[in-house]
Image 1: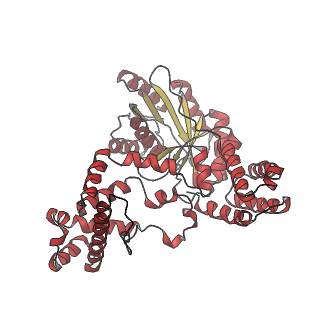
Image 2: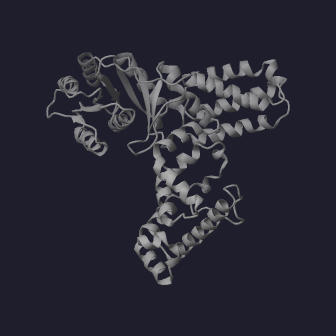
Image 3: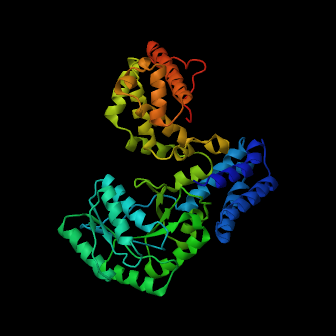
Length: 444
């Protein structure tokens, strides 16, 4: 997420961080480079200028110029101003005092609107709500079917009709939710390839018919300033309450995220961070500012871990580790738990300083899939008692997993090293050091 923006900002601030004393001249020079970085990221020109002016005003104060660590203070000022630019605090969905809460979702065709509706259903269900999806996009071919497929995949109820009356479908969908005791209704509306009068009139009519508590506008984060301009037009007609940045896992330069709040005046409420239907995050300005400045996002990482890991499984694993009984079956289970958190490059990106890791040192997801395939090709006995795996068994496992004997040998060698580490730590009460030469499995 914003890897290029983070890398370039880090380069712009590098000189300033290394200086023991700074002046107005080198602060101004650094901030000129920061402004160029923001403009290259497709941040609105006016927004970039006002942001730099605010940072410069604070940065040339005597407290900074006389500070022992001026470079660190400049980064702190940039962080504070980024948080203010992004919205200062997280903005939650406004739930109705009397259910159901009606959420209208709007956006251009191809922005990820329909997929977001399904993701929002998963998010709300995880928080204890009982959502209903309403398929009111009757114009795009297969839009209703797409939402139905996503609804089945997420086990979320859906209301759909055959017909051309989007306003009536939306109104009857809300009534159906009320009768079936669903406390939230997510209405997917039609999008177009561009803003047009027919689309705007229809979505305005749906808004008038269902009186939503929340109107969310989905923005394709990869479109930069175009997304912001479209959002401004929609807001003038629809007065939506919040924005959603979709496709944040793609080649998003950051312009939409950094410009939207300042130019449209509405908060960003969600980030869609991947293709999986649980890849939706509440938007926290301070966390995104931390990621942009290369300081990581440990809080979101911990939240992902808490959602992904099963407490009972973790407790059983801890007991096995204490008794030095860690098997390949346990290793496979832990590998699968980690992968539930999402693509590993995204997980690693939440760690502080990871933007400085060379691009060619990224996590090899293919290597992890091969490890899984190798272990899946073993019998239950082989997973629990790897010492029985001889030469002929290794050849069979390699053929069954579509890998080579060398890859099987490498995994077995790494497992043996891991076993030595577990025995060493369990023998020292868990306070021992890692054995020399200990390495993680290939790709980790």
